[in-house]
Length: 343
Image 1 (cartoon, helix red, strand yellow):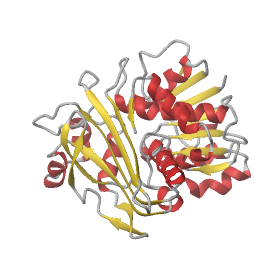
Image 2 (spheres, rainbow, N blue to C red; image 1 turned 60 degrees about the vertical axis):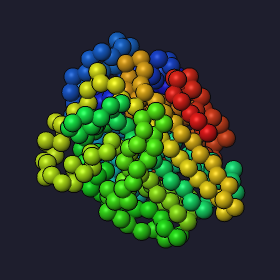
Image 3 (cartoon, rainbow, N blue to C red; image 1 turned 135 degrees about the vertical axis):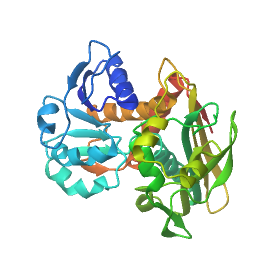
Image 4 (cartoon, rainbow, N blue to C red; image 1 turned 45 degrees about the vertical axis):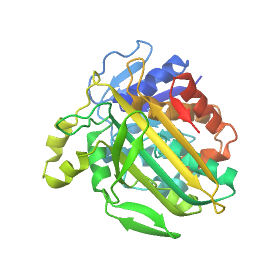
């Protein structure tokens, strides 16, 4: 079993820590705020996390999970990858490309798989799997969203991860591929209705979720869309809300039923199609986003600890498609948790 340090005790970080603990790993969970309702077997460390202190914080651990908000997360990557032989599973959504640190990681014999969530993350692996099975792709689209099960008269939304990262998602220009060329569109554009099984018509819009896939996947037309209840994005565009107001308005309510939906649809050059639809409504007191994101991360941590990922450097999640049983392993965790996967 591995010694694992989880940085960040939010909804996802807490889920990752508890599940690693339940699988028999020795877990240290670090956050700047007090944490409660965590098994006594998990070591809790309450401290500020930063580049200057990170070596001390992770001392004695062989795998580190970066679940920090994007505005803090990139700063700890360099010192982490400077630790000889360190293994990192990185969930942070940052504007910076972690691959900039590839040479540093190779120099120190360390390794990091980044974007190890549901999308980006599992969606990347599924796209590479589709490309392999279909003999290449002509077009692919990804839709993903975590939302309340019922809309309301307000935002019809609550943030299942850092609200500041959601705001970043709404404002960062979206990079997509059209006719083989990478183009940049404004976030929130290409708005269209999408039918979500069991929930009816919702609204989708472009966001910058493709990231490394723009470099690694040979596909002429490629795009990713975030999914929300109708009216949510219109309200965001129409009114000038401060970040503080949005953080308060989008505060997660664990008592409110919610769900996460991911759809990956692909077409090859002969118009043969392949798709995955994944739906979760939470369970065992955990949110659907914590489960669908966290289970991917937990399996990546174990693959790092077991030496299945032996290559050094900084690697995107689609790299896992080169490991024969990685996708099967992650989907097995989903099935065991009762997460619906339709193909």
